[in-house]
Image (tube, rainbow, N blue to C red; front, side, top):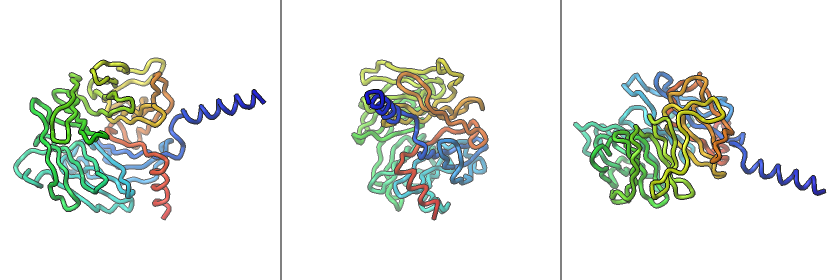
Length: 310
């Protein structure tokens, strides 16, 4: 009986801390010749695929993508146009930062966006140097200026639970937390072409340094307490342009490894102890241009599967 109980407990612990569940889906946005949105399972089997405009309109890279609660996808097809598409491949919403809300004649680049629960969309307009909130009709609801000294050269932005904005500026390589009124409340210099950052459940900030070929975890006091750089010890994984990050409920980290060679995963799951537990390597589908992706949870994946069956 004791042996059986021990086996059951061990199995339960293994299940609770295991790699991604088999039923979870991966939303990917690849470019640099691939120009595709796709939904795959954890083994890379493609369930849905949409060919984007990509280089045909001078767009060299998808940098952000989001699964929406209604089952649609938010993405961008150029450096200025943000779109919402259904699984039936119908474009149901579009916003062009090149001309809307005072941007005519200005140089705007969009690398990050998110949909709010109230239906408004937050878009970071690099170059112009502002974060905007627009409603379903494209009306400007709010505008927050980005800081000076290179902070307008953005890559990813993620909204924090506080309502603050965590913004990565590729040049000069800063991760900046802005308050809801645009005040800088925290900042960390990476001295690299930083791409992405998230706030972890423990209050620290996980940063994908982009050209630094590394991922670092930084405390609020700016102490580096965890990092991987250039390669993963004990594996053959080489780090290239690190991009999107995601934290799983079990504390594992998902790392985006863009511009990797075809023997390296484009996404991998790693434990705080730096053990690799899952790899996504779908070179034929995404090549070396997978900068943005999102691992969906079980409920989101079930919604997608149900919609695709209809």
